Image (cartoon, helix red, strand yellow):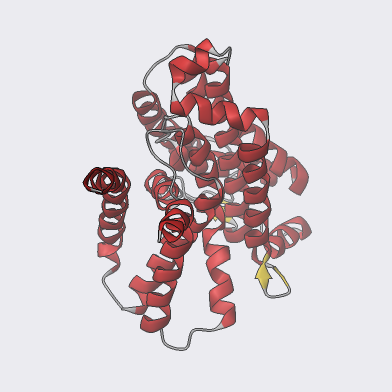
Length: 333
């Protein structure tokens, strides 16, 4: 029994996904293999963004700006593509610009020691505002012909290649889903098998003790925000590859909540220092399947975020109360 309890504690994110997926199987009609594989496609962007959020949360911090950063980076990436017609340069700009947005957050949080909640709340407003302002004040050719949406030039061979990549499959698995899996495995390795990963966990567990042990806490905090920005940049690149456009008003809207929810569903403690990066992948897919359940039940889409909010509260409640209940049971025994 103790062994089962330990397995549940360590890998509850897998069981949560399985339970949610079983509900999806029951509620959906005509579930297909292709439909199941599309879970990876629809989880790709938020999953990659959530991996960065997971690193930040492991240090005990938070980033509320990822959705706005995604919108701004996607817009800049579209303009880069329209100006250069280069897939590679567009990817590099997305990664560098996303990392820059993350670095700005990290500088104020890690170096200046401002509260992450306040800093990223401010940059959430700043980045979204810039995304909308730039859209209205640059050469209309750069944003795809004068609309309020950043549109890639669909007449070029480069566009067809990029769009084919964003919507293509390797066998039956979406390419963007494979990228999500590969990036997850990379960050699982970094978090679990490198000195850098151990420092991230140490800071989240006890920041003062980490300082006493010689860890450069400000530098690590700047780095995790920068890495999260880099991953947001990758997410922005995949977004435009999949959609061919980005709306500065709606792209990435509420993604900060979805990323945090994926992290929490994945078993990472918001207080920092505990949890597995692998869980973030399962958390992101769990949220995607919840979306599909809502659609299959033909529920009003306006209730979507309310249901996700309830799930998030329940999971955090279990995280907070679970250890207390176990301690009480130990005392009674």
